[in-house]
Length: 141
Image (tube, rainbow, N blue to C red; front, side):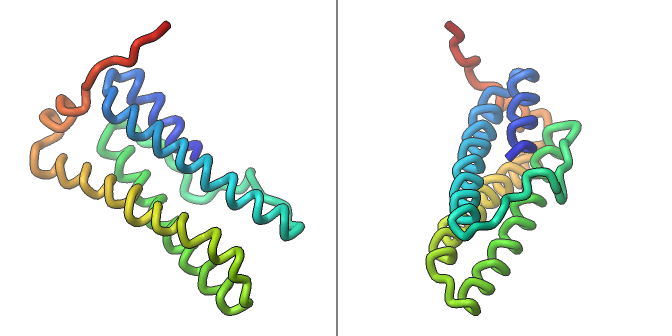
């Protein structure tokens, strides 16, 4: 979530408004995921750990940012799959039902879109891809 937030702000600062809008959307999605997970943990009388961070890596350019975000999505998908399997083993179907939509969103929306963007960079070249992401600056007021 924090990595998406930082990347979205970097895209906005660089004038890459289409990337900013999409990654800001991903940040919002991740806030929703975090809320669902925290609510379930608290219901189960657990304590969420918001300090330990694995894989947090802010990129320095568009391609490294997209690659870092994709790597995190792959890691999240693997962890969600392991957690879903554990839920099934423990017969905790309510938690499983909380995790399955998160996995679907991670694989079918977030990772898929990031894979598309990296494919476009490969096919179009970095300059053409970057130009395609300029878009319109959001109105302030």
